[in-house]
Length: 315
Image (cartoon, rainbow, N blue to C red; front, top):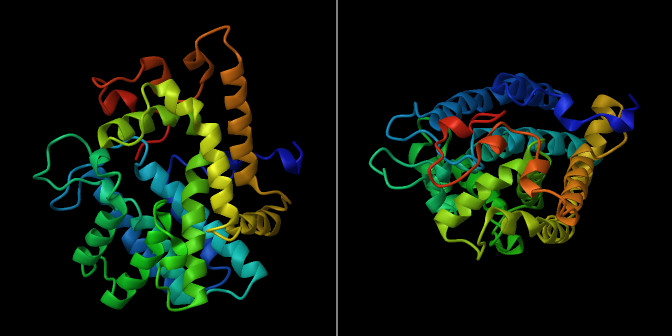
């Protein structure tokens, strides 16, 4: 296999959270002392407990698109972009680098419902999930051993994952912190769209949007068919609001894996190319052309439970 044919999903087994944590730690230690990563390890464990329903006062994650699997994808993508950035630009300070990784872990905690909240799923909070996540962080920062001043920094970084927020208007006190925010905003999009089962997981996103009342999507196919236009919008966001931070992934893959390619963009482009083929082929049902993820054959409707939609990557 040529180096240009290496698949992103083959570098680290994404189904095992411990592997993701180890990979992120190895990347971090290229630039920073081990002690700076200790807070990341502690928070990684607690965030895992939160998504699994073992954090006091909160229910288990019940959103199948924005689940712990997605948080892991974002977390690792953040570490890789940070590595590439540090290789090519002035490295971020160690405390800020740790805060950036923490922001990746906390960025979607706003989807988790509290124990008393038994109506629907966390998807109903889609519009306000970023702010809810920031509230969660600040409310529990002592449990996570995060100082209040650090929580403020992490909160500003998390804001860059909100597609409705004007990043230029976020009051970052330094260009370094702004760069950290743009790295996370980029990693959030790269992580989900490069996921091996991205196209299949869009079925879950449809039902999250439906519950949240977002968009005018009538069917699963309606959302999937518009994903090509969504990627065009994302590319503009990458280039403009996020200042082409995606480019730093290539430096990471070249330095750590001897692959002179941006495997995130390669994976996304392959997804979009396959999606185009699906949309152009009307000889059979579009769903039959989505092959990955056990939930595809089971179908998805309002009666399907999380247990029988679990698929390949469980949060």
